[in-house]
Image (cartoon, rainbow, N blue to C red; front, side):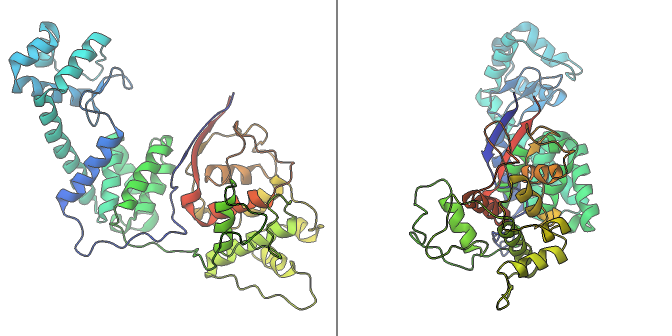
Amino acid sequence: MKKLTAALLTCVLFLGVLVPAALAAGPTDREVIDAALEFLYAHEGNYGSINKNDNGALSVGKIQWHADRALSLIRSVVNSNPGSAQNILGEDLYQEVLTAESWATRVVDQEEAAALSALLSTAEGKAAQDSLAASDIGGYIKRGKNLGITDPAVLVYFADLENQGGYGMSRRVASAAAETVGSFGAITLSDLHQAALADSVAGKYPIRRGEAYVYCRNLGWSAPVQVHFRKTAVYTQGQFSDVATNQWYTGNVAAAVEFGLMKGDSGLFRPTGSVTIAEAVTLAARIHSIYETGKDSFAQSSGGKWYQVYLDYAYQKGLISRSYYTCNVNQKATRAQFAEILSKALPDEALPACSTVADNAIPDVSLSQSWGPAVYKLYRAGILTGDLDGSFRPKDSITRAEAAVIAARMADTDNRVVFTLNRG
């Protein structure tokens, strides 16, 4: 069985939402450390958390100190109140904590885990963890600054990378981002997030990366990013008599209309109607034009076919092949055709992967098919998700309601979906 797990998360590049401007004076070092602490405390463990075998050695506590770092923390707690620690741990484990040279490969059984959890949950254990966490994260932030990172939200994200994978991973990801943009000082939150998703290790955890990105973006410490899509129209409830307020697609129909990507006719949206190739090309042309120029500037010629201006634009811009340009565009578009056309409406940097979809994991789509790469690109970007098992149904037609969902996700990454789809 294919396994599909999904969580609605913001996905990488913000195309339709203006990120708040940086604070006038910027956050203090203490505020940056506290922000990183807040995120890590919410996403790692609690004071008494014990991972008995975390990739070959135990991890413990609020931010899951691993192996020798775990030993160092536990030893400091023992030394702060030896009598109590000896009672909690028992003589054998107590002596091991005091004398062991390394816990690089130390795993624990259930009884040992319970004793260590009790020790770390004492007042001394909590105080030691709070102190060590602040010290560690301060070190992460300092190392990021020493590389040349200046954006405080980027430093918080960098700190989470280092806590998860060590300085080797955080430096590798930051270096990749710096190579792309020219310097460490020029790295934005989106740049670092993109590099993390592309990293061989950090990229294995897209949901955690997405959560870190959303948290850091919401701090409001980064400078505004370029906005490509703005809501230029007003959608009112009841605008289309065939779009009820409680349908699964209603919000996306509203968004597609407000972004100027889709329109109705004579008070109807026809949500269950099939999308034609002409309509698919029109949608792709509008998305591309607005992204590139900020507006839909298509002018209809009198007496011509309504879709010709969009068809000409899409062909000239390389969004469609000649086969689409010369075919009967009034026929229904298959879901495969729709994906192939829409996949070129935005540049690759606007469709970064935020979901983990293994090669050939979509049950009815192979990468070897001519339109297969387009489908996988949109799945990995959180634009398409398929059925419950991930199936795409490529030969079926696509409804206007489904097209509205896709249009809304392409324009506003708040609507994109982070999920994992593995092969059987």
